[in-house]
Length: 189
Image (cartoon, rainbow, N blue to C red; front, side):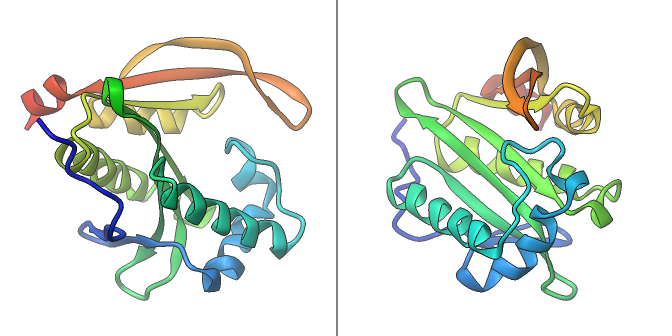
């Protein structure tokens, strides 16, 4: 089967309550409000942003890796009022083994409302249906059990723990690894 997605046009994904769309420069202020909060950044792979320039750099980096055809990072927008509530993406696309990694960040005031599940379902569907993936990986820092529950709800299987895999706020942290295979996804539909 051929690879379908070619990075020529940025894909827009829609769920019941959300639109996943391209991040743009004007999103910097809304994202900065999240990225500067300690609770929001407690489990993400980057440190607290202390200036809006850092957030602009983040958006520019996401644009660059999209142009390099390596990753896709969407802004998560509420359909109801077009408010940006976070970001999500498919990263580290290894075409030779048909594998990519999901990631998602939702603003704290939108936690426990099912948005992460909605986003992850959209990412997984896009990955298997448009990127010809066989395996989608997901991971979270130890202690972020809510993220693990979201992945398991979609059908991801816990594979194990990478001990002291990352550094967060100057401390080594363990990372919990999950995956979902195409055959598991297809069997659950």
